[in-house]
Length: 202
Image 1 (cartoon, rainbow, N blue to C red):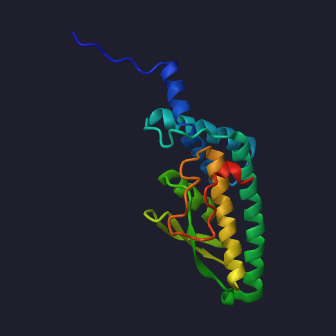
Image 2 (cartoon, one colour; image 1 turned 135 degrees about the vertical axis):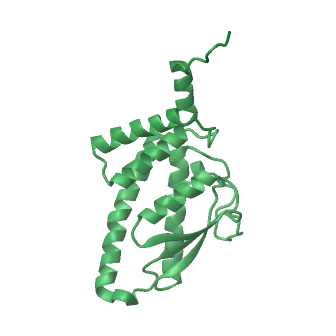
């Protein structure tokens, strides 16, 4: 006589949801970005879709130590929306003023995070803003190569690099993941902070 395995009950489903909170948070943010809206329908619908995906397609935890922080997630979304508006205005003005002569550059940005999910999240959030496109990800060196405009001189390049590092900090704080946060950038960037975690950089 064969016994049939019963479907996972509510306790197991709840445990699975809790173990995948970082993935749920990222899917939720991605949903809001794709819809381009922070209305109640997009927010509630995105959360329900993210939970349904985790329950329907069980996966191992992608960031075992991570604990998503709603406050930092909200800050990440607000910063992103503000940056989209600001960057879009700058790019539009440059296009009107300089047209195809608008200056641009490929900027090398060493990262401190060291997980595939966080590196992907940083790249996605960076690409959403007008005027910045991630052209290459060097996973071994933990480095992004970003096409950015406008960039007229070394000062603009340094400012862009600082902005991208700020994005990295916000993403890491939103997911609540500190692994690799105190490590030196893989490329040995002398400007990279050493011996600090994202929690210490207030």
